[in-house]
Length: 374
Image 1 (cartoon, rainbow, N blue to C red):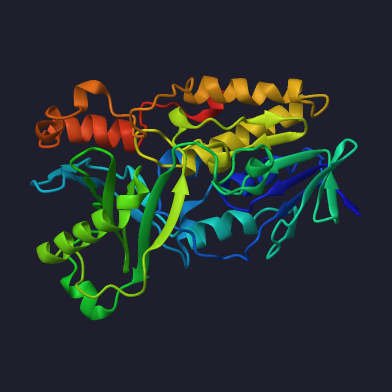
Image 2: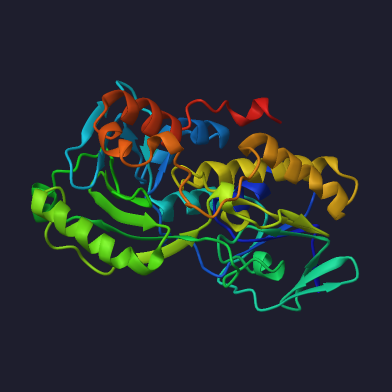
């Protein structure tokens, strides 16, 4: 049996950031992931300057051989009506490819890694958690996304009654012919809200790569909405007529509506495994990064990994992201004053699309850096 102080299930941004943050703590950490890296990850793929700074990423170094698309504007609209273009006059975000970004974060971690290793069993023996009858540790971190086996162990995996947002997307490198007809701009991602406000679609060009997708709370209608959106974008010339391959799906929980417990005896959930995606946008990278850093800070401070001590993590998450406000009306936390029939007019407003949709909901510019909260 291989013994560790901490076992992290999931090598994505949450898991790798937690291990990275604990490197000087003297704790022996193991990261387990079912896939090898680099690997494809369904995600529109952009990060704010706050994320880059928090992760201490040297942008010049990162950009060598990787995609780092500066974003200085957004095109915001409601499907079926003209969009609004907002130029921020400076770089407000960066487009990344998750296959590169996640591998970069994991590669810089010195912890032991067991990749291409599905979790087949999780058992508690005494004070330790045992994974696959091979690895054991007193503290188990669930960082494996929405379908994380650690969350499932707590009774909140697939099949639970939580409301799930489903999305489909495709990312591919365009041919010269495709790039010549694609009107989407790299510095201006496009966000198109569904008319019922139950989701939104996007068109995001990152250099020669193009990412197209749509996410909604009612997954049974997802494909129809996606097909309609893609057909419309093709007709407008925003995207090439010939898209390669199939759209890939994924799922996640929005923070205000997730019901997953964040801790138990010797267990912590971080990132999408904990259901921390921002409620207004579904963006999950910054919450994943920050939850990992908050968890690492708690781990360094507590004398043991009892549920009572680890509850400090849950309290810190509430302080950072707010108290969850469950309701059965809508997964997307759209304020009442934005809802139909006002939404159509608001989505034509330069002020609203810039100050509320972009800067508040998607960029979270009003949220101070995490260092001030730790």
